[in-house]
Length: 344
Image (cartoon, rainbow, N blue to C red; front, side, top):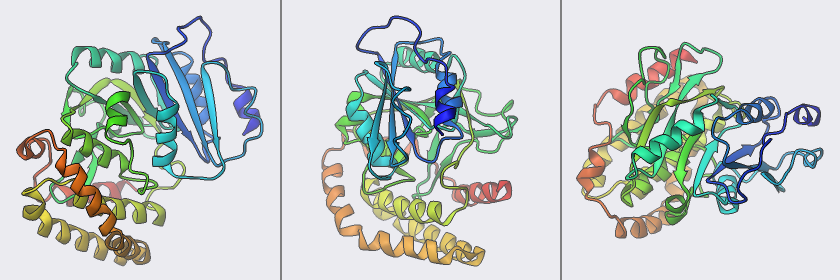
């Protein structure tokens, strides 16, 4: 890892204000294969009024000293505290008005940050912005065009695995950004408490997007803000790790964030969806992971419901406004799931 990091050209090669407009947060964990390329792409951004905050989430601390600079801060954690905690630490260290989350395995085009900020300038009523993600290993396919949230509590990346030259080409409002490459108002991010640190990893960006929406914030998909994303570089696709945290956290998100009266209206659909996928994953050989996720989600409900009281008490929008940006097709979750499994 050390040799690769030292081969990175300087990210900052010009004088810039001491207080940047944007803070780019990069979480490092088992990312030595990808971080050098990510930083190289940031070194050629057309917009350069930014700082980089790298949160080293429990990896080796050797060899980082020469990489750090006034504009590139590295925060070392003693152990892997998870995506949510590490990014919250980065957000608190950030100095910019905007925070841009970027996975170490997401490689932005030179005008990525510039186009996100132009969109923010055009749409001052929006507080979160999502990038256009292209699959790094299959560049003719989309890796996502922001996140969709279904009334059952399931979520997915819009236009995943569809042809990049035909889909995800229009700027539009979406439910929430995918945190692999997203821009947030730092003030709004912190005002809702950032990521839920009980989540550890997976679904925390959907939960954050939900809470931002309940607070009155909106999210825009920006098609000309492009990153090339490897995806699941640290945890692996279809791993027991992703199954466990993904399904446990999606249950918590539904119980915590879904506003009344839709909570009661869609609860039977939520339970049906969880049972369907629990049976499917059991037949696929991941029964231990999915049923542990379900049981641990249920054990954690007292704390989640306590958090729900506070969230629902402070809702600043009408529930039907939230419904308008959700996916409502009854077969959508299953078609999306089949599409992802065919890809895998």
